[in-house]
Amino acid sequence: MKTDREYMQLALDLAASAKGRTNPNPCVGAVLVKNGVIVGTGLHRKAGEPHAEVHAFNMAGEHAKGATLYVTLEPCSHYGKTPPCAKLVKESEVSRVVVATMDPNPSVAGRGINLLKEAGIEVEVGLLEEEARQLNERFIHNMLTDKPFVISKFAMTLDGKIAAHTGHSQWITSVEARQHVHELRDRVDGILVGVGTVLADNPSLTTRLSYKKGKNPVRIILDSELKTPLNSNVADTTEAQTIIVCGKDADNEKIGQLKEQGVQILTVSKTDSGLDLDETLHELFKAGITDLMVEGGADVNASFLRGNHINKFLVYIAPKVLGGSHSKTPFAGLDLEKMDDAVQLEFHSFEQIGPDLFISAYPKLG
Ligand code: AOF
Ligand code: ZN
Image (cartoon, rainbow, N blue to C red):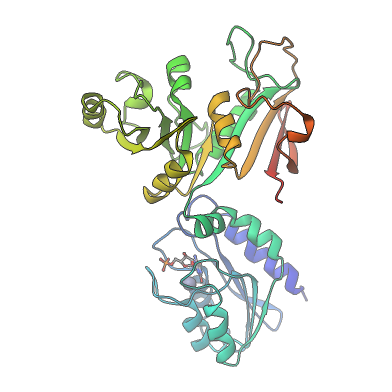
């Protein structure tokens, strides 16, 4: 017979298979087990579609009675786009519910679990909790802050350079690592760069995967003075959406011209160091962006880091050395004075992709 942990791991694996597809909802998986037999499985596939538990109960039918439900997130207690799962769990007469983690959504937050306990069902919370919270780090951050989850993504040489002193940077990493970037783009809502990058490289910032047609994230350009050329790739919205964030004093005629091309314009306040990033993030969240990848340049990266706006770092390191004191580094604009002032991070994982290294890290809390 399998252990509780193994069934919960299966529920987590099911949930994870829809990562990046459920936004703004969390990824959730559910497994129903009776007398050592899996009688139902389910996952939440897409916002607006049934929750994980519904699929699992549909599969189990009458076998749900007396079974144990393993679910990666507290069953919901509210009427959203779908009816409450806690009610379904109660009516299906399961005898035990094992939950990995609570739902941070203020309309649920413990109510789902209370409903089940009040119905006399045995409930355990906290099995593989860390894994479940990691899986839904984006959703948890959204619920707690009303801001998108911000990922800083960059590629550099072994000696920490993102371009030669001439500005030449194509390519730092291998074909394999660059395909991997497109897999990331395929699963985030937004991709953000500064107007400097648009002017220097005229990137299209779309998802290009060799084996399938990916989903294009919304392209977000930080452009306080609205310098994005009308004929730039990002101003062409036939393939992907674009949001340009500019100051409230930006030229109205240019705003009109960009809007005519289908570009969305977001005006925010300015601070001494440029656009107000906190306001920008709140506005982007209101516009439906639940997570975004900041892809540079060095000054934009630095301003996000300075304001503590980065929630996760994804870094590709190529086995190459450029040298020189004038070739740019990923956070060139930060330029701190002492080692003690350095922003503290924690490595989370690393793997090799082709010849390159791929590292994930989080800002150290506290
Ligand atoms: C669950 N199981 O599979 C998911 C849950 O608009 P709705 O009705 O889809 O509700 C979305 C909210 O429900 C979401 O914010 C989160 O609190 C919860 N998600 N709950 O019991 C699931 N996806
Ligand atoms: Zn639900």
